[in-house]
Length: 279
Image (tube, rainbow, N blue to C red; front, side, top):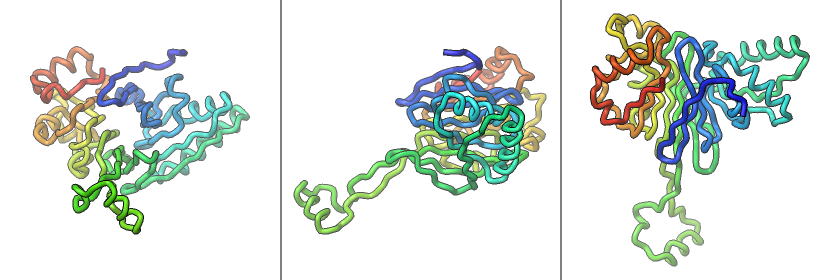
């Protein structure tokens, strides 16, 4: 396998989280069991086979590798991928892809799907993705992956199997869909991206940005640039019900050791061991 980009991996609750994120450098994530990825600031060669991508916003460190990824799949004779991205970004991305087509005389086959907040995108019988608005310096989106199951309605629980069968045969809908948020991806956002979308705090896995940690970087100023400060996490620590919180997108101004020291000083228990720094 070609090792062309940094990559970390973690497994939780049957899902593999792969990726790397550093502010102003590159951000890319993949969940192979779900057959999807988030953002394409770079494209590890091993991500080639994943054909559904959700782009949070149009900043280069989150989208720069999109043309490379599309061209590589065409070169490898793979089917055109599907890229879900904010509606306002579709036109500019189409223009960029046309420019690369003229440069290298190679086609850029891709299905660009415009998305807006409040949409629902079906992945499979078991999984669906919903889109939410986040707060950044450009239009930006967050994503929630839900696991859905059909369960017997409460009023029919306790019935015998043959009774349920008879109801079904008579045309009665005896089950109802139940959903469980299994993964949320915030992308780049200031705190309202979390607060305005409470499901972010409820998903089993939360991939959350934490761009700034130093006291010298005042959170009020950080918020204007559409990012989250360590103080924001501390203030909301009781709201996080997630099983795993991945803190990523750290500023390149910090050395990894200083990040660990600062965060563990502010949150000694690392939110009960649930907070993981993606460094």
